[in-house]
Image (cartoon, rainbow over all chains, first blue to last red; front, side, top):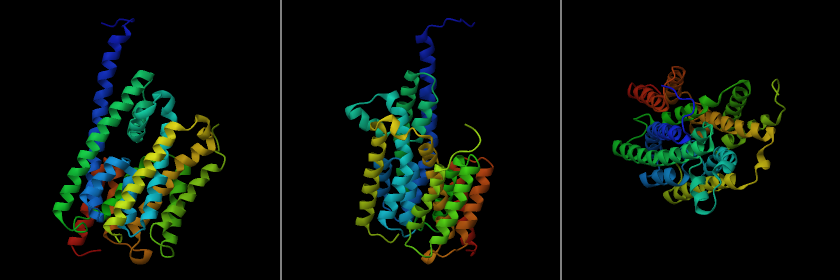
Length: 233
Length: 109
């Protein structure tokens, strides 16, 4: 029973349901990894309150893990904040892509900015039409915000109830979390090369400079992006 | 962690403000600023460099920044195996933590 001229509104209803269902799915998946953030953060020595504050106020997984990882390894607060901020730069690029689509002004722009993360951006950009893209952005952003924060709380309370973090291996969870965040970005020779160079530079510097600094210096490896891209153009 | 509670709160709030300002800037600056391909490439590679360096430092350095191979490295190896087997994020992290915990319980690393 296929009609070639299905009215837009009927098509929209089905699209809207799919988008919100997907947003919920993404929220649940992100929430699962929020539990590990909550647990790992408490494992590094931050309080439950500080951990939850990070998920509410900072609300960007990679940057959150970076901050707690650097502090936990003995890095200075400045190094931690700088690493978190550098990792957060990609959210600015997402904002650039989304701004014409969302067209936000005033308070809505502030809320929209806070919700500009990997997942909400990806879901929005995956939609062929503007209306769907806006719905995908907001529903994913809000779903992830609520579930990520609930999950952080659960993880933080759980870890603080269980005691010694090294017994649970939570300190090993941190590099694993970074590798899991890195993995989908290793899409070709250039990213692999940059990753290896950055890792080697950071390891080489670690005995010689204060904790937290090697990672920031290693970020310079990303400047390889300034070299002209080869092959396809 | 070597910082006190006050400094930790300072870091939490400063990082939050910085990251929010960055998000807001993206919604507010003119498009053409970051439209150049070279800038896009650097931006795509920045998290790669940072995350790779973080993996290396968090897994393989010990007291004084010296290179160390212990239960964390084994945990990371197990986590990478899980990734190769297409495990989701939470499984990777749990596998790494459990591996390290088990090795430590057995008196290794």
